[in-house]
Length: 102
Image (cartoon, rainbow, N blue to C red; front, side):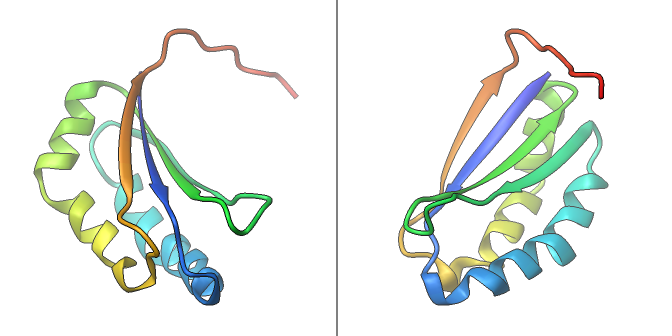
């Protein structure tokens, strides 16, 4: 598996709008990308800290196809008027995974 984390620093007055756009416009598009296993928006407990968009992929190749298609840039640009700073993308291979059974 492969993980992409995008770190966003949003202007505080836009937080409700950010969450609405992410859930209604970003999530459905990302979920429909080949190889996507999940998409989450992590909201900091301290509103002065960064939000994190986490996407999980079957393979790095699937994540790269998504990146190269231009869809990622289109989605990130949906929120660009709400940034305090430019988002930062970081990628990770999953070294180990433990799933909890509830």
